[in-house]
Length: 120
Image (tube, rainbow, N blue to C red; front, side, top):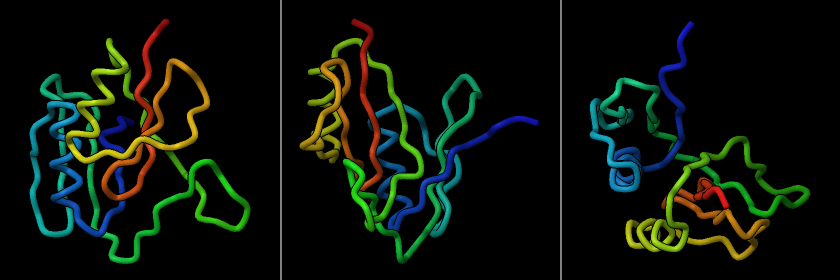
């Protein structure tokens, strides 16, 4: 078995793929109205974006009775401040609640949380 992709549901697959393409530097490989994929040049597992018209973004931090986070992406960076600035310039929003000094929890344009982190 081989993991080929993590799939994120979104009302706008192409737009979310473009966001992660800017953030990660990965090219778009498949581009269909309901399915878009990104793959790293080294051939590793990529990201896919599937049309979900009724997508509800999770709540962070978690709250009882609200949409729960089912996964998040961890992205290691060299410079946390620079990576956070780059992510927000691409369309991310920094979460109000930050659990650690070496991590920045952000939301992508569809509301999926992801963490930028650095080794201290």
